[in-house]
Image 1 (cartoon, one colour):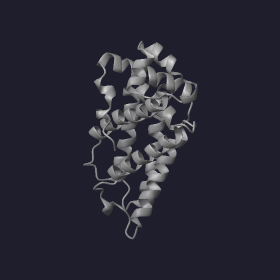
Image 2 (cartoon, helix red, strand yellow):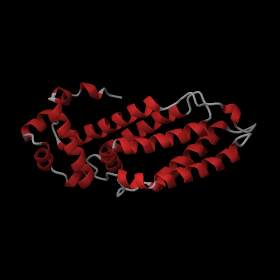
Image 3 (tube, one colour):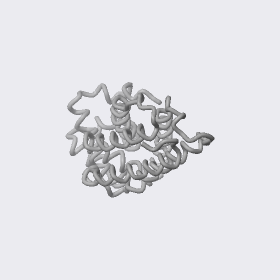
Image 4 (tube, helix red, strand yellow):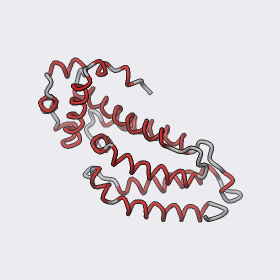
Length: 214
C-alpha cells in the first residue's frame, strides 16, 4: 500500500487542508462523483481553484485520494483497537462487528463518504475504488484469521471451507443491511437490532461448526 503521508497535500497549512478534505468528502458523499463540481468544493472550503489543482491535478485525483485517506483513518483506528489475543474466531468476529459500529459513531462524515464511494458507479473512478476495496478486504481477512484456535472446531472439519462459510455468512449479513442511501445516523439508530441479529447468526455458526456451544 502506498504511503499517503507523503502526498503533497500534507504540506498545506493544516486548517486549510482539513477544510478542503472535509468539504470534498461532504460534497461527494451527498451528490456522488459526477454531480459534484470542484467549484462547489472550493466555495465551501474557501480556497482558490488554483490551490486545489496544485495539490490534486484532477477531480479524479482528489476523489481517489479521499477514498484511500478515509479508509486509512478508519482502518488505523480499527486495527489499533482490535484484540488479536482473542483466539476464538467467532468471538473475534463479534468484536470486529462491534468495533465497526463504534467507529461509525466516531467518524460519521468520513464513513458517509467512504460508504458513498463504495457504491459509486461512475466508470471514471469505480474500477479503482473496487480494486482498492478488494485489497482492503484481503488485508482484513489476514488479520481476522491470524493465530485463531482451530481446536474449537468439530473433528474432521474442513478448516478452509468452514472459515469461508463463517466469513461469507457474516459479511453477507453486513452487506444486506447496507445501501447507498444509508448514512451513519441511519446505522446508529439500528445498532441494537444489528447486535441482536449478528449474535443470532454467530450462535447458528457456533452450533454448526464448534465442538462445544458456550
